[in-house]
Length: 445
Image (cartoon, rainbow, N blue to C red):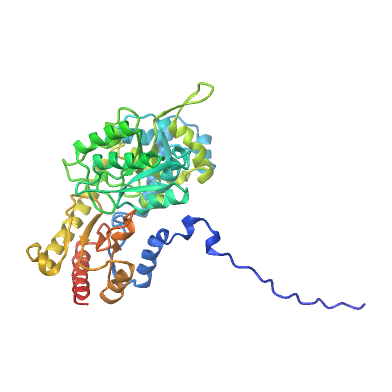
């Protein structure tokens, strides 16, 4: 039998994709800042890193992981939940909005004075999914504009960019976002024929600046929201870490009209690796047929398309933490808060040692003085961009984050953010000594 040889086929020539053919949110170089920071940290592993806001990881214990899951399962059994249902809850796809809403509602009541039903809560994959869900639900028209504090956490700008939502930045003052600036921004947007739809801010220890909005300004912000028809997106990852006696009421706890959607996270307070957050949207939504549901229930349609549901194991672990601590995360995080306060104090002391305020004319370095949180900002006399940060990491062994990446409409070119949350006081002192040498070098150049 004659075998016909198989002819070799020429290799398939693939036509490369053009970057310009991708979505604007992918092409936009401003969306790449966090990746560049991470790559710089990997490129210079010996450098002390002030560039991230990673939570303290010295209190993690692998034994606690199974303990908290078991604690939550015991909680379900104590409530009379059948074993078959518990098994299905842990192993199968769960409800889109999650199954620990009751526990989160009890925590919010205890810690924040926020009174909402379980049906008003959605369990999410951290802040980022909560933001995507909220923005997708609220922004129905291309003429809707998001107002945001500036500088702001890059995640809010990224979420808006991916959803093609225009953002107008409002530069904050020394005490955070100022209500009259919000009112002026809303009027300016409306004058262009567009509608200011929502306002984003972090009232407590804002990322990146560390500012705290005073009580009077919080009350006035709620008045402005009512007057201008704004929904406030209140992001609160750091509020538990205030000094004793200095904790401020959240905007949501002060909200009597339903103008605030509350975005929370367990990453900083309980379990970073669980990647769980939550959205509180208790606003009532009326259907064409007269039905009434909470906004959180309506927004489940968006979550179902983004992630279908949140991890059952992560929810069980977080649920166990809440039950174990009697829904009191404020008390449960006192030791953790003390760690962050110690690190903040170490950062401020080291800066004052290397850059005495009375010699500002000589060194041109000054900084703000937050009373909590994970970050502070430092003004310098040169352009503190990503190229400067790479020189700092490569030649001086210390990295940080350029403040310019957090501004929405330009600014922060001569400032940097220091994240001190995951560095020991000794590492902070050494890191700021290295930073001082870098700043001196840049000034000389």
